[in-house]
Length: 333
Image (spheres, one colour):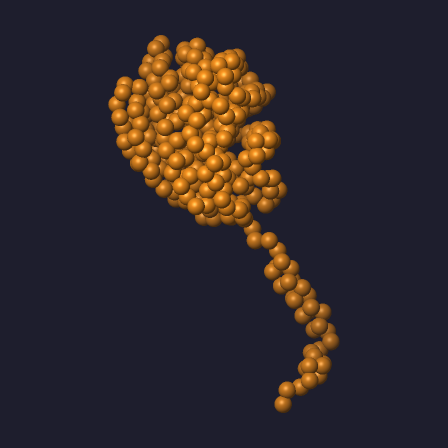
């Protein structure tokens, strides 16, 4: 025979009741606690076709790494990260899979699906150097920037077809050579691209042999002016006073040439950071993140940032990525 509920309860020793209540309260709190966000990393390959400075067509599958904060709602805007350029073939080949994992985690917390292509001629993608711009005395920067931009455009076109992506909201971010080629991408005005962020963009720098004096800076200036004639989206240019690749004066001249030609942009030059401010993107994120977040917010491209403690953790160790891939070397020849 079942005892009445009151009688059953009476069978519990009085001293056990507080312990039972504490356990029940802990279980209730656990059930109510929010699930920690996870950074989901994956990769795919995409065959692209580009032309180098000598007119040769090159077709190759490009490795693309993506990151998503699984606590953010879909459809998500796209954010592309375009890596820099190492000065030697050996360094370019040892890149592994470009990831920028810490930067990607932060951008993903703002609601983006972050895509990081490893371009042709580098690391996991491999292939020949389609960005060669010739010797220092006769640099032709445009074709190399274009080859990199075309790869970014192809990745953007692919991502815009996905059901969980907002096809009309994309941002391109680039470091060093990747920054300059992201401005080249802005000049192409691909569908969906709404803004570009250029970190220390340029080429031809040699911090050991010729610090602060890149090859043919006037040619870079003319190249950026050409991009300004067709780029009609907001751009943000971020440099430092102690950039050993490009110095303090040339980046400002390049930006002014871009803007005077019709380009839309904002220029920020931070005080010296570390031994070489060229690495601001990877070495000093706390410096630039407020500026970037404000830029994205003003253009309706980012949700409010989660508290630092709530940023997503990686869902699993990243496979097949070299240590160098998180922060690629930046010789920008």
